[in-house]
Image (cartoon, rainbow, N blue to C red; front, side, top):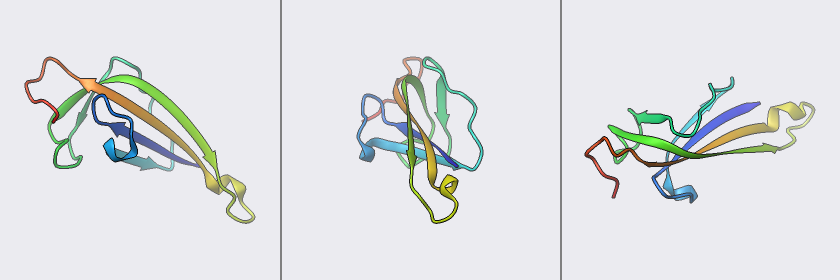
Amino acid sequence: MVYQIEIYRPGKNNMEDCVRTYTSATPFLPVQTGELIDIEQGSDDAEGKVLRVAKIEHVISQRSLGIDPSGGTTHRVLIFTEEESRHEEKWQ
């Protein structure tokens, strides 16, 4: 099983609007709407930005990889965000 978190630019939900993806062999801690996310080492336009979680979607997909079918399962957590009003920097 592979676990992924994808964080999307405020108000966007297209793949090209994903500003950061984290991948792990173990599950991430739960994320809830309303929480703040500070992307410290994201893409150039994401650094230092604090975002509020607006919506969360889970996508579970499976792909057979020969004898071990469990190796092809991916749990993706899509985190859609909005600007945090307490911070001056704005997304463009």
